[in-house]
Image 1 (cartoon, rainbow, N blue to C red):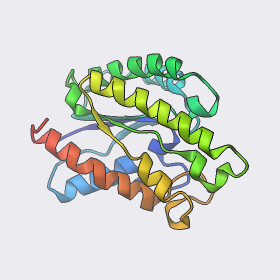
Image 2: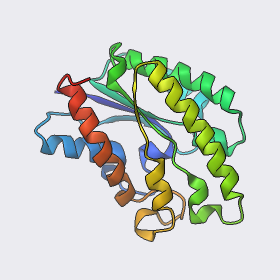
Image 3: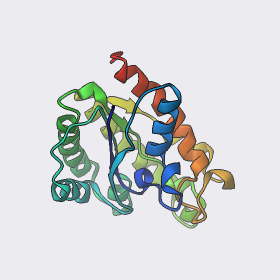
Image 4: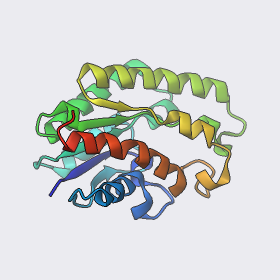
Length: 202
């Protein structure tokens, strides 16, 4: 049986959606339809976490097992709190090193997702949306560079969050977090990458 560790923040745990509708669980559901025998995902994620808070939580969970694949999506709260991209890059690199350990040293089995653009959502009314977009782009450039430098996979989903940012069906009731429908978009992009990885395609 394959195993899956999902590391992140609100976007991984699925703030305001049922647990089975977050993107890790929807990805597993899609893979099971392809006859992959996969256990329910182990999720280490909480709304509001920054890179250093996720790192601390990983230490507290004291995880020793390894997993068939690992996803990592973190950084929006670093940007929201006004932290520097360079600080993010350093802490993200440490998290990615840990994720590779969790993937039994197989960097290709670690899949990094880009940071969604919260500034495009109704929640950001009154904020400088263009500045948020620029900063998210800078964070994502660092995220992608570190991921590819470590030979991990990188999945860009920010475009979907911008495209669907004002469409109610793709938003949770808070006008900020994604709905099940948005997570389904991510899962549909992620599942083929995971399937190829599990088949030895990566």
